Image 1 (tube, rainbow, N blue to C red):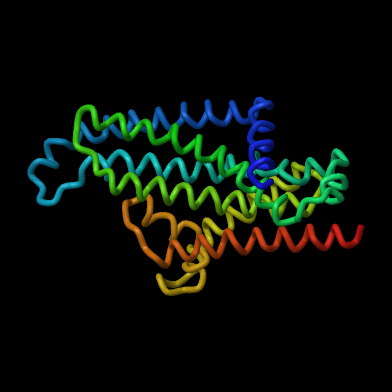
Image 2: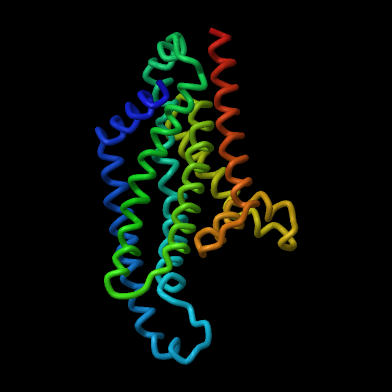
Length: 247
């Protein structure tokens, strides 16, 4: 049932122009950044040949593109998650959904995986740009895989938070603004800290996704994203379960 709900959500996204617009605009912007980074790489190539342990294309092209993609998707994700539950509530179909013989967990997970499937398509399209570098140079596939994993975990975190805030209101615009505000706060909160060991640094999305985007895997960062995603999914399930009990 979770898969059926997820596929229904995915089909619904592609029936609207929003999904196609997001794919087109994100690819256009990232393509421009990608070619700009290639120009930067060629401009410093002579200096790189004289440097010991010089950074390669993975560091100078792939990593910056993924970092810019993470910021861009921070702004786009609330537009994608705002309708997940709030639109059902506004259209009056949420009551029918809650009264159906489907568990709340299946509904929430189905909607969550529906948006995650869309993100997988988006990440697959983004990965084509760095993979094209393999036609002319050596690409560190390990760093690329770590970067794409970090981007996926970040988007899953965006989806979980957006799903929860979408469940709190019948207005998709309110859900989008609330989600953007929360994600932006968690993105920039590390600037409030006084060092790498501050609680703000541990709570920040930026401090945990940056190592991935630069090709480094860390168990602490994996645990952070797992706890972040699970927490917001459980909050959504709890809230909707309480709403079902209230009738």
